[in-house]
Amino acid sequence: MKRYRVTIDGRIYDVEIDDPNARPVTARLSGVAFSVDVEPERVGDADPQQAARIDGPAAGDILEPPAAPAEPAVDPLGAGPRAITAPIPGVVESVATSAGQTVERGDALLTLDAMKMLNVIRSPWAGTIATVHVDTGDRVVHGEPLVTFVPS
Image (cartoon, rainbow, N blue to C red):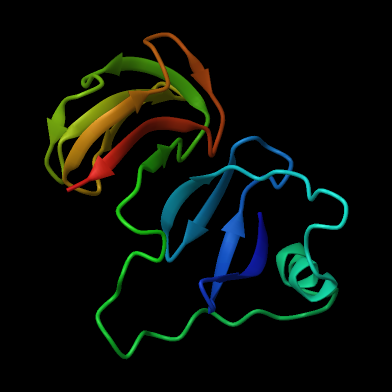
């Protein structure tokens, strides 16, 4: 896992990226996973300083955890879709939700079998399921999107 410092709407955030070459990229901000589409830069589009901020920290940089905000936390990416990703590799034992379903925080979304242990993946937010990315029997790797939904 690599740490990057990114700028979104003029605010700086420290994020963790599981695999920067994956598509979509799974980025974690304060423990919350986001699925991010990254496209290669087109020639002549961005200024060099902007590109330097996107590339991440320089070799040897030590990133401190982000300071606690003085104001109430606000989702930096808005109320758009959020992805729940696999916390560990395993096999999907069962899926307890479907697209369009409304869920509450703590509701079971699916069960993941990892090394003969059943792990119930629960919703960290209330919202509506947008997409279920897996089916029963699918093998998943750490960081792979399982469910995408829009928080309420």
